[in-house]
Image 1: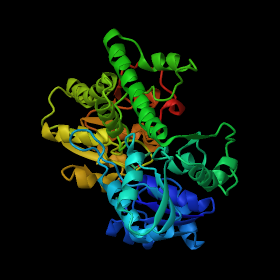
Image 2: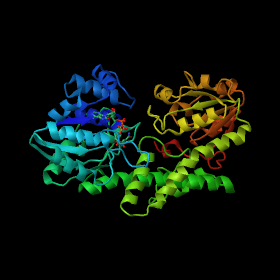
Image 3: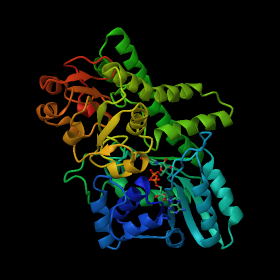
Image 4: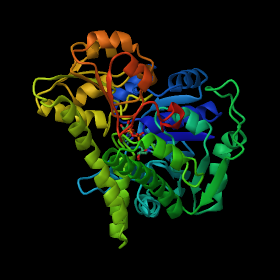
Length: 459
Ligand SMILES: NC(=O)c1ccc[n+]([C@@H]2O[C@H](COP(=O)([O-])OP(=O)(O)OC[C@H]3O[C@@H](n4cnc5c(N)ncnc54)[C@H](O)[C@@H]3O)[C@@H](O)[C@H]2O)c1
C-alpha cells in the first residue's frame, strides 16, 4: 500500500522503516530541513538499534523515500501522523503540529485518505481531527480518521514494532478497519524478512484489537499512566526499604512473582523520564480534570517522580558531605539504555543540580553525548567511562547501559580519587564492584548479594 508517515522522529522513522520492511511503499515527511537533508543523504539523525540498516536497505529497494510534508500528503493513501505532542506549560498536550497537518491535508488532498493518529494524543483528538478535515476541505477530500497508538520502547523500537504484543486500532468505519488490518497483516501473520532475528520469537499471543477511536486514544494514555504508577509505587517502596532496613530488590522480586503484578517496571531508581511517561501523565491528569474526574492518584505519581532527583542528590550529598569543588563522574546521560534520547532524562536534571552546587561534572554516554551537549554545555564530555572517572570523588551510574555492567572495576578503582559508586539504577554487579574495593550505594537499602537480575530491569 502507498503509505505516508509525517514526522521522522523516534516513532515516525521506526514506523516508516518497518512498514517499508514489511513490503509497503512508504514516503516519510520531515519538516526540519537539517534532519530531512541527513535522511536524504543516508545519515541517521537519531540512534535506534537496527533502524539504520532497515532504512538503508528500504531506500535502496525503492520502498522508502524522504521528502516534504506536502509530498507526503499527495502520495499516501494512508497517512500516519507521527509528530511530537510536547507538554504545554499547563500540562496539556500541544497539538499544534497535528492541527497544522490537518489543515494541509484538508486543503491539498483530493480523493480518499485514511488519516491515522500515531502520535500520543488526548482523548477526542480524533473527533476534532475529523471535524477540522471537513471544515477546511477545499479539494474534494474523502477521509476516515483512525487512532493507532504506538507502544514501542525507544532502544527496542524496531523489535517492538515488528513483534508487538498488541496492535490497537481505533476506527469509526469498517473501511478504516479493513485498511489498517491490510497494513499490519504481514506483522499479524509474521510473514516478513525479520531484520532483527534469524529465528524470530513466536508471537501467537499477538492481538489485533479494534475499538472506537476514543477508546484507542484512552488506551495509550491509560497504559503509560499505569506504567508510571508502577514506577512511582516501587520508588516509594524503595524509600520505605531504606527507612526500615529491608532490601528492595528482594521485595520487588517477591512482588513480581505474583502473575497479577509481574516483574516489569518494578525497578526502583531515578524515576521515569523520556519523551513519553512524564508528558503523558501530565496530559492524562489534564484530560481527567477537563472531564470532571478527580484523578488525584496520578498527581501523586507525578509528585513522587519529581522528588526522585532531589532524593538522589540527597544520597550524593550524604555520601560526599560537601559538594562544592568535588569532581563527579556521571555514567549515562540518555533517559534509558540503547537510545540517544535525553529528553526529560533524569541524568540531565541531576547534572544541572550538581553544577549549581559547584561540582565539576565529567560524563560519558555511549550514544547520547551529542544530544546532551545542546542541553548541558557546561560539563566535560569524555571518550569512555574510565576517562570520566579520572580523579572522581564519586562515580554515579545514571543509565544502565550494558557496557557499564561489564566494566573493568579493578582498572576503574586505580583511576578514581575515592572508590565510591552510587548506583541510581541498582544495575551494577555488586559483588564485582565491591571486590575491587569500591564502596557501593544503591537505591532502596540494597545489601549484597541480592540484586535484580538484568532481565528484570525494564528497558
Ligand atoms: N518516543 C517514543 O518512545 C514514543 C513511543 C510511543 C509514542 N510516542 C509518541 O509519538 C509522537 C512522536 O514522538 P517522537 O519521540 O517520535 O517525537 P520526535 O520529536 O522525535 O519526532 C517528531 C518529528 O516530527 C517532525 N515534525 C513536526 N511537525 C512536522 C510536520 N508538519 N511535517 C513533518 N514533520 C514534522 C519533527 O521535526 C520531528 O522530527 C509523540 O506524540 C509521542 O508521545 C513516542
